[in-house]
Length: 382
Image (tube, rainbow, N blue to C red):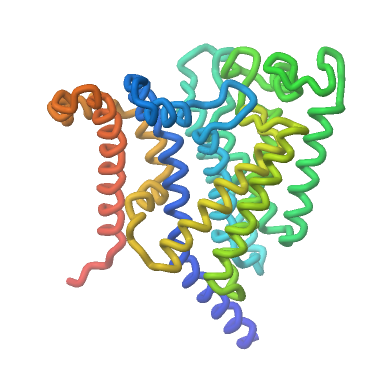
């Protein structure tokens, strides 16, 4: 009995030490959050249409109208991938007693419900009468993906998780391309005729984001879960003690090239579409947002031990706060009050100065919260 306890304690100690080393995950999560809240920068660049670089960057910071891909389309998908990786690191050891199982399930349910409620409030809450309340949204989707990925992490092996991802991709592809029912024509991937939209109009209560379609609705939630499960697999690789760091980097880089090329090839069969969360979109973003970004950030932060990406780590460690600040705090007015003089000096680039000022103010708020948290957790020497 003593031997078993000692082995378990040693294993948990190893896991905890490893968790402290995988700081690159915070940097990646912060980068994805920066993409999600980077709308002010995109809007500011529209005023600089005379500059070719501004047109290109502005276009990449605007979501695709339907089929196709721009860089900001990666935002939510990339963040969900990091959620999956975080789940793998949060539950590295399977519970060994009924008490631990209950504790794990309580943790999962409380976090999922809290995120979901935050999402409803973010989308307008219950200010409007019931039919106008939006139940779907970004945080709600993250909550559902976190819940499913956590349950999978506790009960499934890595091979079973990979099998679940493949099953979801194949089934969802079949449903989009070959399943027909009254009011829906098989293979119709248009805005008005797609399967996911038909499901939301039939089953999702409350208000849809675009009236007849919701990009975070029920119809596209299951494929989003597949993205989160891919993140779990990435997290398992990061948590492995049997794979040297440089080999982890090689695996991630090689997987990114494979998945991105596979996603481009799949685009000819089923288009890359962020709002439909098509299988080609899942595969392509897993390569770009999951493996490639993780490989680069892992090399910089965990292999080279560089602090260059510390600002992104602040965003990553307090990602929910960053998202909520962007919604409920008038950072645009604050930025104008503080950086208005600089923006006038900058001339046509003044709008960019104000937009970047908004991002800087969010970061400063998060950094203050970060330092305050560390101060509270640091034991007094008195």
